[in-house]
Structures are given as C-alpha cells and as structure tokens.
Image (tube, rainbow, N blue to C red; front, side):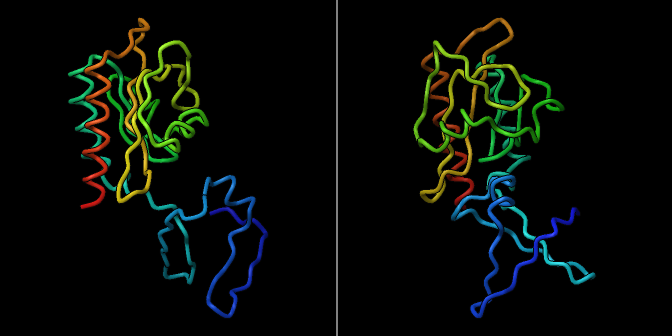
Length: 177
C-alpha cells in the first residue's frame, strides 16, 4: 500500500471525501461503486468494484468461443481494464487500461463499427477497434465487448457486429442476475 500524505476527516454523517487527485488517477467517477474491505490491522480499504470483473472466468470462455466464430481477436473490458481476451496474447492484454477512445465509445452507450479510423482499445496494444458494443446492466454501462483488427488488417462483417451486440447484451444480463 502506498501512503499519499492526504488526511481527511469523517463528517457528522459518516462521509469522507476522496481527493480529486486520487479519483482522477484511479478513474473513480461520480456514482462508481466501491467495495469496502477491512483488515486485522485496522485498515479500511476502498476498491473499485467491477461487476463485469466478477464474471471474468465466464467472460474468458465467452471470448474464446466468439474469437473462434469470428476469427478475429476479441477483448471484454470493464470500464477501466481488459478482463478477458481471445485471439491475442492474454499476457499482453489482460489488466491493461482501456484507451480514452474506447472509454468514449463505452460512455456513448451504442455499438460502433469502425471502418476508416484506427482507434486503439487498450493502452500499449496497437490493434485497432473494428466493432465495439457497450455492456449495459440495470441501466448502467459497465464495460464493452470489442472485436479487434486481425494482424492482416481484416475487419468485422455485419454478422460479427450483430454477434458482438448479442454478446454485450447477454453479459449485461449475467451481471444483473
């Protein structure tokens, strides 16, 4: 654990303010769920909660099946990081942060098919997004299913786009239940 040197007092309603600098670096937005942990040493730890992250084993299996069906690399992300990948090195992709471009696509809440631009999905990975669909659960955006360009530059077709939209809707339902 890293000390920040920032001290905050609890107000009369039991609230504590997380400083703006920490919220910005940790990508904590208004309304984001935080999980609260305690340990034997008396520490209270706040951790960003990822409902999609709870499904990482299931999402990985789903990504592998979709990757085999589309013949394109696929990643499944929560709002901050890649939680599942297929058709691309898992070691390279997993836990990488999403790019601001993918974050914008997620926040716009609609599926996109990118044909003429090259937008990266993950920081440090050069593969461009070909299709992305947000995962929406109980009205909240909690991630995305993304098909990436193949090494040869191959892009998705119409059926691939529908498949990604169905996958995102299905994962959203899984988060809800």
